[in-house]
Length: 322
Image (cartoon, rainbow, N blue to C red; front, top):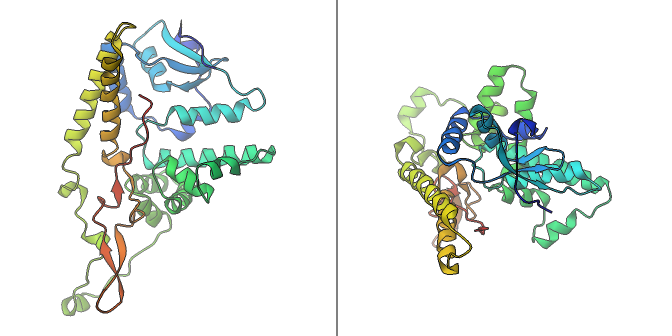
């Protein structure tokens, strides 16, 4: 149950203890949040438990305090009486569903979800029920889909996250994190210290090494994602327009007009799935960028480039709540 909006001092709100373990602080995002609140105030109320622990709105709270705001809008939710801690973590992740996340944050979410599933299973709950209802064979596939990754990629990514946690020096940790945020494969390569054997120079002269499909894909800086900056700007503009129109909407606004305003937000959500950081593994090639193809003449199976994706990634739209 969610309460009506109340106004309270943001300093009385407490951060969820698991929030900083999952979601990283980004000062650029914080400064952008501060400017947005300074211009538009807090549009979406902060969501908290009845004992003032934030489930959604940690950045809004911090921005409000930096702006010396005395009150912020808050709604309260009731947690399960039997398992409030587990339910609180589940809601924390659920409320952050539409947040733009790095690969590390996505995998931290999966890691935390696995812990809540194990905890519920230990309490005797049927954790396979949701799996069956959603049509998944494996938990890893369900968890992977929730963050836009394949189950196989999630397994690999969680090994990288463990390597980050086990890193002996800050430099080693930063190196793995930096690679992981480029791609799970890059992070895995650094974490497992895989090295490509150097080809002797004289051999290279005699026989050039044929690049793989992955090696031949144009790099991001070379223009693969030429559209991303314009698309990001467009999404920010659409979100700003939606917020402005939503605030002007009243109970007397015609239903069709209200739907049109909601459609602006829905279209913005569709479009931003194609921003590189939000893209997910291609369902055709499972993020591998290549497919098996049988040669009709020789009958051999060869690898061909997947023509459905960009570097193994595509936009993936989920049904909107707007």
